[in-house]
Image 1: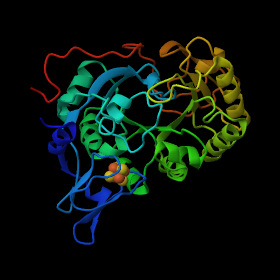
Image 2 (image 1 turned 135 degrees about the horizontal axis):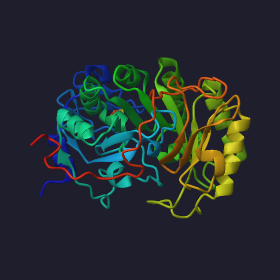
Image 3 (image 1 turned 90 degrees about the vertical axis):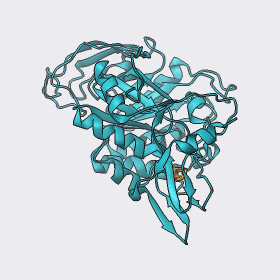
Image 4 (image 1 turned 60 degrees about the vertical axis):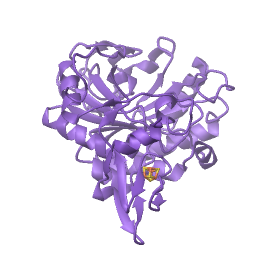
Length: 374
Ligand code: SF4
């Protein structure tokens, strides 16, 4: 019987020239993520989905492991077209192996035999048509790490942009300069999961801190719209000192980057820390504000973090966007994205008017035909 790895080996095509280099005969070096793997013929990279076949880097292609509709607030993006429906798709695999991954069934499908995940054939145009038919305004590569499947995302985003949709990555940020150059024409919004400010912790998750920090600086410099999330895990990344250093770093890159600090609940292999409490989130948010961040949000405990779900004007503190979880309760920004009370421009990518939400909860659409257009 064919294994998942066998099946995925067929669903590939040669990687983008911008993301790989052949050297030393038939070795290849992959630049899709910060591991920058050197891969001999016949071997796979750390992510296990990109591999060397005869001196050619083969990369995932032609399938999705999931495609569903999410409110854009779930990604989370709070300064991007509030209320928009985000058509989210993902493939399989990840370059990290976080013990608390909430998407481990897809991200760890090639590492963990317990992660049983199906996949379906897909075609970029059919995915975009599906998204438009459902009322989505943004296509998002998410669920697995999109960097390791960048070529496929770009193929979809080319179709999406031609159809007038915006595009986004929800990523761990373990990118390279080359990957971001490759993505820049096709990706509008980029969410980075900044998991810690401690290199030792990052190594436990299978990465390093510095490439993530480099990515955040590059994204800001290159003009992507960036929002950052930190899942606050008690005892893992929630010391005052670490949160101060983390938020001071983000504020140095730009105090206008929204920082979402979100509540952990036990998942996958990390079951021993208790859940993050409201008080922990509020304390972390206070640290972020003290570091100079102008837009700090607390997530995953809707209705229990007071004003930390809302967007306020950084000058006069007028309420601009009121939220409960993913639901937009009120929207008062002007068509140019300014505060109606004092005229301060609020950084973000705003629509010229608020369109009622298609849905404020994620849903899996019923489809009349396959995502490969058949
Ligand atoms: S995507 Fe990252 S982990 Fe995968 S082969 Fe390329 S450099 Fe290695």
